[in-house]
Image 1 (tube, rainbow, N blue to C red):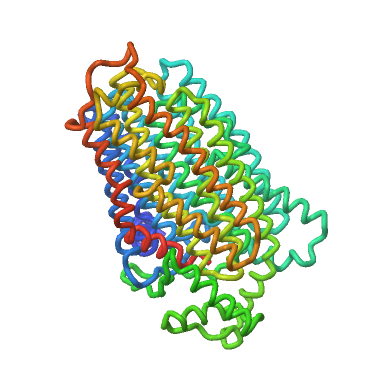
Image 2 (cartoon, rainbow, N blue to C red; image 1 turned 180 degrees about the vertical axis):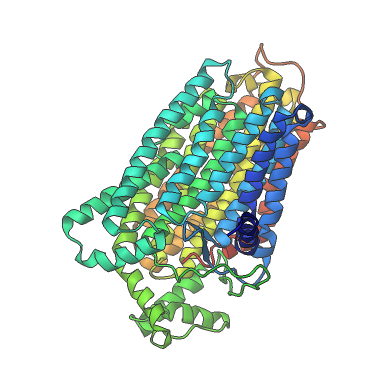
Amino acid sequence: MQLHRLVDQLVADTLGSLWPPFAPEIILCATIFVMLMVRVFEWGKRIDPFLLALAGSALALYFGDPWQHLGDPVGLPRYELFTGMLVYDKFSIFLRALLLLFALLFAVLTRISGIPARDDRCDFYCLVLGATLGMCLMVSANHLLMVFLAVEMASVPSYALAGLLRERRNSSEAALKYSVYGAGAAGIMLYGISLMAGLLNTAHLPTLAHQLAAQLPGMPGEQKLVLVLGGLMVMAGLAFKLSAVPFHFWCPDVFEGASAEVNAFLSVASKAAAMGLLVRVVIGFGVVPAGASQPPPVSADFAAAPAAGGWFAVADEVAADKAAAADDEDDPTAADRHRAAAAGLPAEPPAADKPAATRTRTAMNRALAPVREFVALLVAIVAALTCTFGNLAAYGQTNIKRLMAYSTIAHAGYMMLAVPAALAMAGVSDRGAQRAIAALALYLGVYLFMNLGAFAIVAFLRNQTGSEEIADYSGLVRRSPGIVLCLAVILFSLVGLPPLAGFVGKFAIFASLVEAYRVTGHSYPIVLLVVGGLNTALSLFYYLRVVKVMTIDPEAERAAAQPFSLVSLPGAYVVAVTLPTILLFVNWDLLNSWTLAATSRLF
């Protein structure tokens, strides 16, 4: 075949199958290529890389088209790309939109705060967009090798970003620690992947679930031991990206050495991608999906009903599940039929009337119940330890970045609480499991603005005072009452107090734990609920300490005299990222509907 025909075929294949679902990743790659190429020419050096990064992020978000797919009442069928390496569904669309929105806001933050310097901007934004590209692949990963490659693609640029402040010794130390810990975690995860792929003869996550369901009942004890060991090693790699206990050691030192802007990137984008990947992996281990279809034509209409219900429909769900159990214990679709009847919706047919493939999938998911229980308990233990350790360790911190590092660890634990709830309900109430993951997605949406706002204020105050010590914030309310108010709103939202958006996120997580207990009868969701509630109360004190220093303590002698006015470009940015923490409490229906739509086909 001639070269021009090969090129025509490549373009046709890209526009016909890859461009709609893979457009944001293609645009990010093109943006990085353009930023590197313009440096070759003398005229290109006059182009600000910030503008290219801003345009690339905005275009990627626009062509990701989340408002159409998540706001449309019809559904998007789950299908696979690149021979099953990636999966394209509403969940990946939602998380990718969060990542791209954050990249857009992050680029604006760095331009206002003045980091990086002009000579480093091209390298900095290439690293940021490269890491964002890896994170977009993380939330779409459908193969264990893609899990590893996406994690590394997101991690390696982050190591360089942590050492951005080359003239500071602790910044170089942070980059070195981050890369050493990351290399160790990557090696552990890759070895676990090799064990699982060798034992089950596949690395494709849906096929892996099929193989587990078929082999697990008759699997010898030594093979089960290898399987458990491989799963633990894979979870170790994910725990490193989540900064979950006991793989959290890098986080406080890296946050202290890196700039506040980079901390915002690691705290928000990295955590969102890692949470999405965690959901992909645990569902891949424990749930057989309904199947993957080939990509439809560009103009095809996707038809599938989104999940109904909201966070406050727990009682109706439990009643439906109990009625279904009384009517037919062997029919796994009975609960859905009772819920549909109660809501006046068309019900699915009983399991006996469904196709043989559907009944086979139901039987395989029942066979995977021990896997789901093991993974749920493992994640539950890690989540409880993570939020408890993060909150306790934050008490003694005097540096605001170290305090926010432990806050990030604690919030990773809170978000992980939704995963055991989802796995516990996966074999009993699929819609309840969907709502649990939707609670996690809702928390991520709120968390984006809370942590971005906190680190933005830290960065701007660093520019004003030259310090990142909490003690140097003393008396700040007398000079800059507006910035103190914004930071106090964000900190109280991180606690989860009403009437702020952080309350909505935590309430959704805790509601999923209550629902998991009432649907399944397992005791560990209630234990997790108690742990989460106690940690929420504990966190109030160290966040309140920062507010107390700013408002009650006498002004420090070496504090900067010039005020921080909200009537400025940095002030306008702070207000813009603080307002959603209030508005999302007042009107969170849109975000809630998007998260429910995003998880409607996960189970």
